[in-house]
Length: 277
View: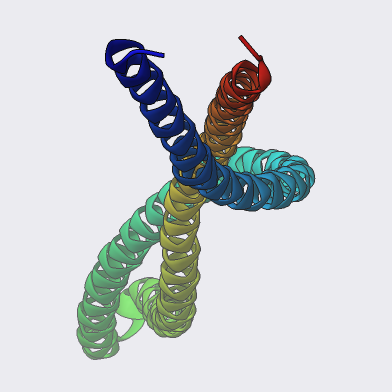
């Protein structure tokens, strides 16, 4: 064997040993790193799988709770709508009643004015009766002076005096009755005013209750929308976790493929080493 051939054999042997060392290092370093990455990916996949299960359970529970709340919201909304309708009718009735009470107070006040006018008229009648009585007394005196000639006139004067006395008594009785009626009407007005104020309080409370029910309906609607948005958000998060899990699974499969390729290359190199020329 000449020197040149020996050098070629030595070079080939060195190259083979170098390749074998490189492949062993490649198998040891690259495969170990890939396996380490796979372990990390598997750990992350397990966490994502647990998150997916927990999120699915939470989504199921949230969906049931959301349905229950939606049913409760509908019931509250229905009751609120019925109350609003009834209160609207009651409010209209209370407003009408308040107006009627105001009208009644006004009419009753006019009645008092009429009583006062009647009382003034009675006072005038009483004044006229007093004057008539005085005139009748004077006529009786003159009839007495006239003697026999004034006897007939005295009878008329006596009747006039009697009528004046009765008119005065009647006027006093009427004045007394009118005064009593005026006092009764004034008390009635006070009662009507009190009832009117109570109706006004009820009407104001009804308006506030209606306003509260409308605001409550708005809040319920907003809460329902919030629950729907939250449910959609849960669904989106669930889809995102599934997509991420799928990406990790695909990456894991690619790493498995890479490991198989590396292992195949290493095995092929080892087989080449065993081939005898």
